[in-house]
Length: 400
Image (tube, rainbow, N blue to C red; front, side, top):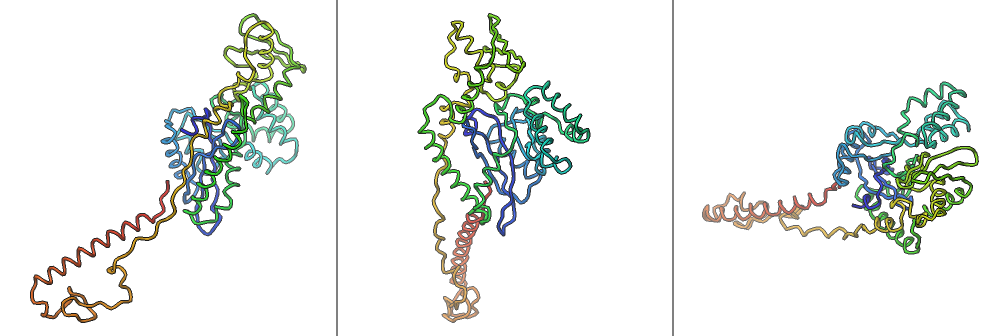
């Protein structure tokens, strides 16, 4: 399964309008690959964005991903019409994150300014409940109404401090789908079948482009994770570490914060390692201290979860989208179906203007000939009607 090869149970959901003369909307489900790039998983054209449309789409996703009602999956959305109750009904145990940009767009309708934007981000990016509560208290002291408005949105939907570590992603924005929607802009004004083909061809080309980048990489980590980890390593050099002689380390930061790291369980009390799958600065400092005490730790990069490995990234893109043949020439229609505008000649009396079944002449001689002719025409008509019906069925657009 494509998305499962990446190791992240995380999907962004979004919808966008068809921009041409054809009504409808495209619903998309987009994952995150090990290089923190988008991984388009599924798309469909529906009449409108509603609870029923989302439930049907999620049902299809659930079947493909082998999800059940009790599956611990994670979704992120802009709280589009119908998506919240659809997720709640289909996957009641799923974690549903709300895009922080969408929350801020609603917030700034009443409270504008740099302070509110910064405070919202500080609250959302706090990785522990203690820090989250401290940031929320700052907003409360500045503006009680803004604080009360934000408090009505449960923090498990938008604050890292309340996220579980199941998704191995600390993403707060639903820009996964935004990126895909921008790539599909030139195809959204086309007829539905052409639009769907435009999307398929884009995805087929995208996989090839990603593979070309992968062929140039040689690290244990993906390029994006390697850059993040380099910054973490640089910051870890400033930390003070105390070892308890077992699995625990006490790490003190220059600004006074102090955390506990458990290398055997690969967790830190700051929760950043748990949320992202990448060792935090406290963990890296502890790994160095462990090595200084004569313990074989291996390279620090090995403490990153497999969702960030180059091998995992390559495994995820082994799955291909195959090319397809173009539309075939229409089947040749028989003369029975192509007589529009032509004169009909009776096979019995050879007169123009009627066929053998409507012939009133006795020239045919008997009912046996009429019967044979009638049977032949009826059989011929039935056969052609069947062919025509098959053509109609094949040319009807199918939603898949």
